[in-house]
Image (cartoon, rainbow, N blue to C red; front, side, top):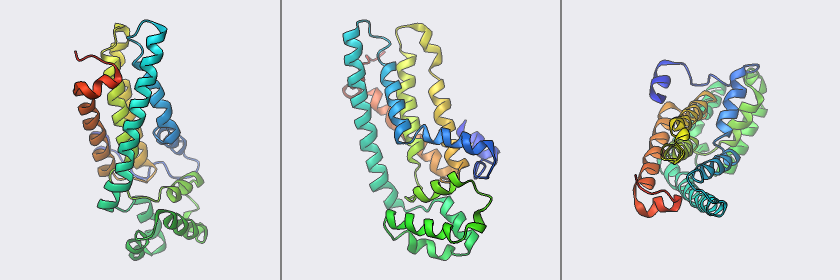
Length: 239
């Protein structure tokens, strides 16, 4: 679904312009897989694993166990992606390409990306502030996001987290004891797909970034729930 949409629709930079409803939609979706959003989704995911448990005591134990396990798992993988994978691959964000192309300073990007992340933020903040007329048609929320998202681009961490959580949540819903939940297993994947699309729409990632990030999250989550040792952390028995 993700590849089909990205390959056939003009998604890139589709949610960056002022007075466009897609800006707000894009930000709601992208923040749902940000720090606060991810914490909320982990809580929801952990709750899903309590559906098959009957007693209140066991529900609480299952919730806490699942919450801690998924939080640590997500945190460890996010650290690896942000501080090892991305710096190794060194892909420049499309938003920064856009800013540099508008001002004719594309030749400076390689040297700018040699700076620390904080220094890159300061660089793009000053660049945009000193040349506001070049970006008068871009929504202010988007510009702030482009400044804040000063890390490398590939692969997309938001897409990775979204698909990882969606897979774990879908597994729980599909194997819930209460059969009324089984048919909703696909909903987390719709959310994850929309998160990935939002990252491209607000200009901070390319189609390749989100596709590889999504595939990575889906694959690692699949491995996590396949093996007994890791699946037991979520208190699910193999079907």
